[in-house]
Length: 497
Image 1 (tube, rainbow, N blue to C red):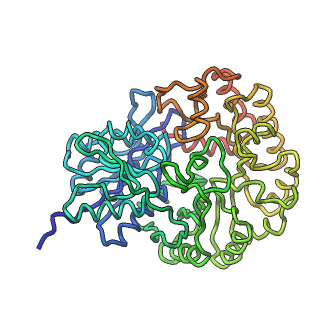
Image 2 (spheres, rainbow, N blue to C red; image 1 turned 90 degrees about the horizontal axis):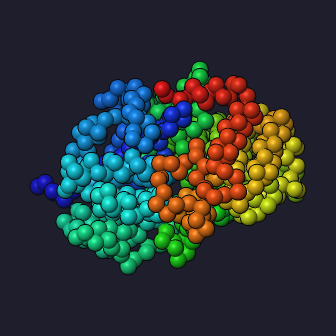
Image 3 (cartoon, rainbow, N blue to C red; image 1 turned 180 degrees about the vertical axis):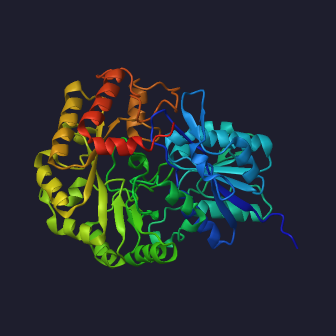
């Protein structure tokens, strides 16, 4: 007997959009392997389709297909008609909008799906989606998850299986019922023991395509050896509450509940995931996506000791907090040597600012610039042959021109000391952050802002101390003058068109 209420679920990465001259790479985030793993636990059929790179039925050069949008951005990936062709075979379509830059394409996909297939259930999740609910419901989404989605998506599927379309018992969602936005009375609970989370289904991703395109985090396009990479998270949340990060507001009593709280997987679970990636999927390079890998330093060191035996290459692109690399302001040499033995080849330093005032005011005072021996820290990593990227931010809401220049000069000094590459961002007060609320209150951002204009290439704060055009000029000049020609050429090689 056929069960007409047994759904097929498609997790859809939308086409990518980028400003001209911007590096283009597929999403490939961990969101879908984690959701896919949850659905496999309840024997639900699930596939992932990445509309940026396509699947085996699409030309591998799909990512190079570009279309100029009215916004001035370029869209990369398959056509709308191809998306609708793929969607046709599924009952529930899930899209994630973690970052603001994903919003336009996510909303576009929902609109075209609902126009062609109004009966299909279209759901969304991610930090951007939950803080822009009106936009998502206006585009046609039926449900938006307001917190972590692994348990939520299982409850949605099981409700669908029952023949009901009453979502009132599904935890941690807002939904549309007869044109009215509703939320349930059950906020759900945040998973504190991360071993309870489903095993990620990395095999759902178009991994061979990702590897062949060489456009993952930190992957060098000219690398002569095929990098078979995958992402992993050994922890969730963060011990810091920076004002420009949504984690700072993800606390008990909030829309999301306390998902910003720092939580860990056990050593055994982490090693199980790593062995699966290496032995089953043939992965040779791991991108650790933790917001704070060393949030519990003793635990992290214990993990690294075990990872040594796996002979993997490790990168941490989100950044390793500086304070965790130190002992009383000096580099923790023993730990840095262990990082090398465990396979670390690259990592990012979230330096953020060269100004003590800015670090205290906006960056949760997460490291002490005055009592950190940065030259010794950089040298320690250079001595071990571990490549360092450094991230800097200018244009904080109350930052002066002098302070902006201080950060750029600090970056220049660090580059001379041995930092391999430096990335410069203009401060972005994004929805869902404390800084965004501050800027709205102070009239530094228009309440009806254009989400496509709010990105790292633009200065988004108006009426700040430093004019937007000057911030953009400083940022561009800093990137060109601080970085080496080799690094600049590598980044530029990832630009399409």
